[in-house]
Amino acid sequence: MGDTIIREVVKDVWTFSRPFARYGVFPIGGRSTAVRLRDGGVWVLASTLLDYETKTKINELGPVKYIINPDIVHHLYLLEFKMAYPNAKVIGVEDTVKRMSEKSFPFDGLWGRDPPNTQYGFEQDIKHCYFSGVRNKEVAFLHVPSRSLIQADLLFNLPATEQYSRSSKWIPRATLKPDSWAHQKVIQGVATDVEAVKRDAKTVASWDFDRIIPCHGDVIERGGNKAWRSAYQFFID
Image 1 (cartoon, one colour):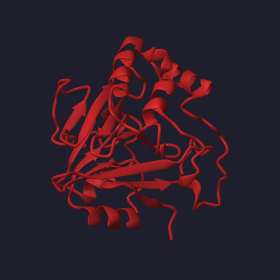
Image 2 (tube, rainbow, N blue to C red; image 1 turned 60 degrees about the vertical axis):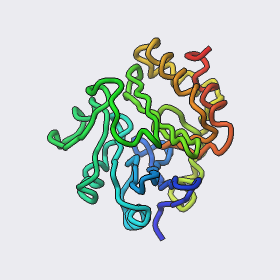
Image 3 (tube, rainbow, N blue to C red; image 1 turned 180 degrees about the horizontal axis):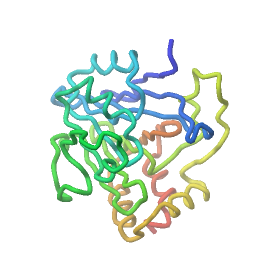
Image 4 (cartoon, rainbow, N blue to C red; image 1 turned 135 degrees about the horizontal axis):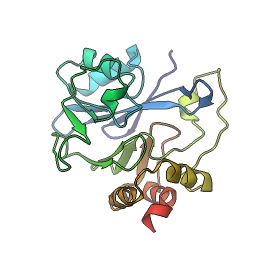
């Protein structure tokens, strides 16, 4: 059995959680999320290794139609996913291209380059909001049927207990909760355009969600909208 923990968080939403230490030091965990859309296709936020277990489960869910790059730093496995699912559309963030070694990677859409109201084909199930005013150029996603907010580095919920539950290498102790003063300061520190963050944080706060699925840390199963409003209090109030 490998290190990947595969779980159906709610109907049609699966998470793939693994150990990950930022800079090889900070055990914040990593997570990909797959959503089975109402048309039978699969939408994947690709943030972790496409190991055998992950690929097997994704293949069970249906044909992969969308591979999502949610910000400029979560791109390490895009090529791996695209090679496995060549017919899937890859939608990402414009500035990711500058960071990838494969400069000709075939993105089918880019937040930051495309007009703000661009529709990519999955909007019947999943809303999106591009945060142009944060350092990593993040995108937040709302899976409407399950009321789940899916995102990368806009919000953390540490320690990464689930992501390290099969690993003996680390015992994650660092705590960073959405309602903490420290988390609020982290968010303020990565804002490059305060007015833009205010606009987008309020948009997400207006969405109807109860669950938050972060790339780093445990899933927030209940009270997600309240957690979001706590973390982004400076920008919303």
